[in-house]
Image (tube, helix red, strand yellow):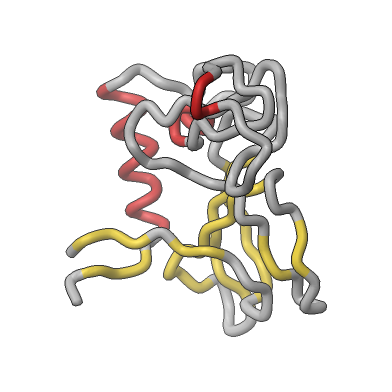
Length: 138
């Protein structure tokens, strides 16, 4: 009670806030872009060391430039997803999150972050796939 799946507008509000209030970009050529700031620091060979450097899941795959910083407590983790054929894929490489917004009767919107890039992407995917959700408190 009191929670709901994030909408596309919720995601846009987050990205716009981080862009304006914290002067962050969502540019894949910027290693300090929003995606890296939202990723959990748990990563193979994380340059942050300590508890951030781990091989145990949940964690991001190793990348020497694009690594999680978790500067805002979002703690995005790469759970991957279940493809439309039923196979699980991309654990450690991608974090996928449904929006509550439909694109059609068969497709819905989602956001995602890659282990090897620094931005938050958006896309449309068949509803028969399995992706995670982020909830927002009402």
